[in-house]
Length: 462
Figure 1 (spheres, helix red, strand yellow):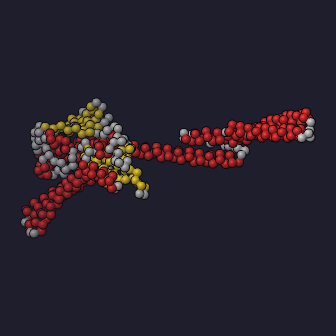
Figure 2 (tube, helix red, strand yellow; figure 1 turned 30 degrees about the horizontal axis):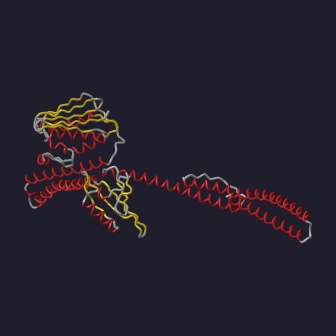
Figure 3 (cartoon, one colour; figure 1 turned 90 degrees about the horizontal axis):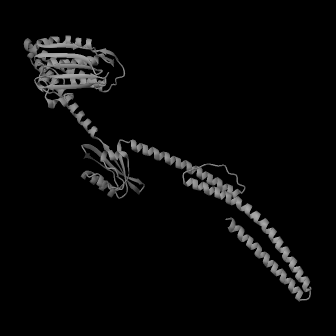
């Protein structure tokens, strides 16, 4: 910039000086020709004029050069500083420096640039924060998120896409190539073709996935499509379990209620006049009412256990609870000629446990052993094995078929339905046992052989 301004100005000054010297020298010659001045005098005056003009021009050039250089520096230096700052802005760097320029217009320009830089810096920081937050949210979502362009090709996708759909490089792939399902293809084609929302469910590697697609738009302008894919396998399984539970509860409640209602109506119709028949019917009503009460109690207990945490309680010693349960079941076992044996090698003590829950675990397992043992014995043992607390109940009963073992802890599951109902079982006992044991960090192990017996082994951590 300096050369572009100072150079032409210097040239212009010397051109003007040369023009002036030429015209003045010619005027002296003309005076000499006319005889108004002698030639020697004219030459002398012309020479003096040239020297003076050159000297004045040199001095004027130096002064003007210094003035222009100073003035231009006042403009160029701030411009260079502002250019460097603009380059820093482009790199995402911003360092605010207080500026004080003597030229008002340059100061205004610098102040405007500073304001722009500060706003730009804040905007960039905000965008970076929003981007980081969005990426963090997307990476931690339990759903697969896919962004498509208007042609149906993938432009972005979070980590969950690879988990649910597989594949490493998903960018620039067609979504139809990634998900090969007829229902999904129909929904995608309709959404891409008509710009509408669509959803469906499909199977992928034994998983039930919910697929949803919708346009990304602002006003009438469409920028692509967003897809969300969610694993709903567990949700569907829970829905099936809930349906089965409601169905089983309804059936289990209906059976005793039907008996109670039937015998009550029979008594009202005249059977009450026959004392023997009436007493027999009342006994049946009493049995069914107690069965109904036990069922309701077990359902409430199971619901309570499922919704609680093991965060309080007392130390619970297994030995006195085992002795109490044995005394309660001893008469029933004697009538069946079943001997209950105790083998207490070491006492088991659970910390922060509920006495009633622990007693219920012992009662449910031991009563089942007595119930399904027609002859022989039931052995109850406690001991420490590899630092772990073990409670074990072995019987010589009818055993459990191998195919039934995986389902033995399901609610209302019965291996022998007729025998269970005859003995008054609710089908919830072992499910309650499993939930209580897991509440205290234990596991239940079961081994059984048909017509040889069953062994329930409960292991609690040290």
